[in-house]
Amino acid sequence: MSTHLSIPHGKTVQLGVDRPMRLDCGVDLGPFTLAYETYGTLNADRSNAVLICHALTGDQYVASPNPVTGKPGWWSDLIGPGKIVDTERYFVICSNVLGGCMGSSGPYEVNPETGQPWGVTFPVITIGDMVRAQALLVDHLGIDTLFAVIGGSMGGMQVLEWCHSYPQRVFCAVPVATSYRHSAQNIAFHEVGRQAVMADPDWHNGDYHRHGTRPERGLAVARMAAHITYLSEPALQRKFGRRLQDRQSVTYGFDADFQVESYLRYQGSAFVDRFDANSYLYITRAMDYFDLAGANGGVLAHAFRGTATRFCVVSFSSDWLFTTAESRAIVHALNANAANVSFVEVQSDKGHDAFLLDEPEFHQTLTGFLRSAAEQRGLPRGPVSAAV
Image (cartoon, rainbow, N blue to C red; front, side):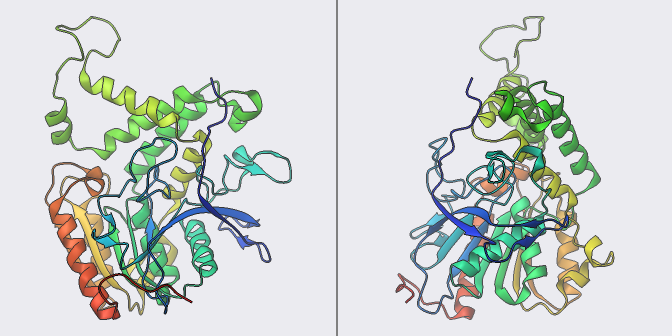
């Protein structure tokens, strides 16, 4: 068994070199690395940049093949030449979040002071920390204002944090299938996943790299439990029902008799080949700590005071992980600030993962919103000239 994931990455940048970044936990981190990918060309006045924020198990390869799995980028249906987020018109940026395991500094990477992976000695991070690191990346790229910040699920949390922390730097924002805070139910599901990882004897209190092991069984179980929350009951029933897996009758044992069992086992085993267990602990914890209302005296509307950003909030009717009610709460908070906001609840039975799937209503909504915002921003159609 390989004890260290072989994870190549593309572009990287060292940030916090001259001045460490203060984390919410009180630790000064620096220098640190962010790994990122870009697509398209930054125009002459640097006004066409679109930041894509990834979800819990996503990465920077939003529109290009993943070097570990070989699969297409996770939003390659939306992003590319002539697509909804047209890379002939926009300069698209996507970074691996701080705490991730695809090249950005986190528990998987080596602590320069010890020469060993950080493990659980890496400081605990928050969504706010992730966004501050992204802002330093945007500074490094010479961009003052982002045309758009777009993301689903945890990516949507980052979108909202951007609009709260850097309201003058975001022209328009698209938070999708997300919430302004993690619910008690979602925290509970994450705790089940973390406990599965930490109960694996190969975890070794987070120091598994030094022991030459990986908590693959625990991480696989965590992924299986989480994956159930990404789907809806109708989607599971339609896809699997009670159909048996490669057999005519049940075995009266504990093998994967049902197709849904086999599917979840596959999801778990495939996940451990591309993700680090400690990163899973850190990123789920960051989501748990996210609470924009709590950070603003319990009043969500205060998080968006004076915002000039244009918003398009999108939810999915069968998403029980981040419900439409939570998206409506965001919209109400924006309305309280007389913000420019549109809201669409997409009718879908595919559950939370619908934002990653072929959902024509979502795609039409995003197309229309970006086209209108680009006109308001004065962005010309067609290929752009490079920045000087």
